[in-house]
Image (cartoon, rainbow, N blue to C red; front, side):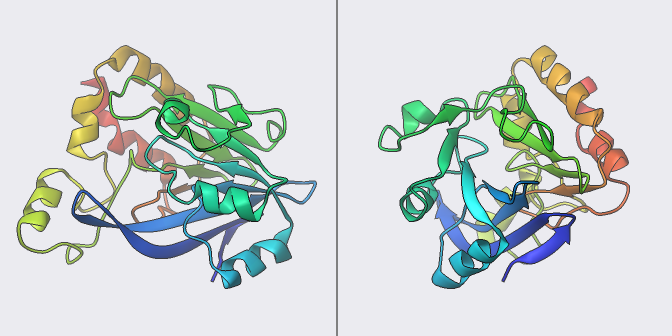
Length: 229
C-alpha cells in the first residue's frame, strides 16, 4: 500500500525486477499538487489496488520517467491514464520509440509543477542523465539510480561480491562505482550538484534503498564528496 512520506507525498514499494541477472527492488513516488493533480515519479508495475489508492488521492496527470533506465512500466500507466502527460528524460525518446511522450524534462521545472517541484538534470554521466527532483512542501529530494543501498543479505554468491565492489552495499546509500566512473564530464556534474545542494533537503528518497530522513543535506554532501576530488 502507499506509504505517506510527508506533506502531499507518498511512496510505494513494488515487486523486484531483474536487470542483467540482478534483482532490483522497485519504488515509485506520488506527489499531489495544489490543484490535486498527481505527479507520478518512476512508476512501477501497476495493480488494481495501487490504481485505486492513486485515484483516491487525485487525478493522475503527470507520468514521469526520471532517467533512461526507469521506463518499463510507463506504457502500462500511459494506457491506464490516457489523459495524463508523459515526460521523457534525456536519451529515453531514442531508446523507447514505442512510447508517445508529450514533453521532455530539462534543467528547469515544467510550468505545470514549477511552483511546487524543482528539478535538475544531473549531467556529465555516460550511463544516464538522471533528472533529480525536489518537492518543496515536504523537503524531499528524489533520486533514482545515482544513489543506492541494498541490504547486506539482498544478494548472494558472486552477485554479492559484485554489489559490494560496486558500492551498492554500504553503510549508507552511496553512488555506485559504475556511476562514479561514468561521470566523464565532472565540471558539468559539479554544476548540477551545486544546484541540488542548494535545496533545503529534509528527506532523500531513492528507487533502491531506504529513504534518508535525518541530516539529509549532510548526507548528500558525503555521498557526492568524491566528485570534488
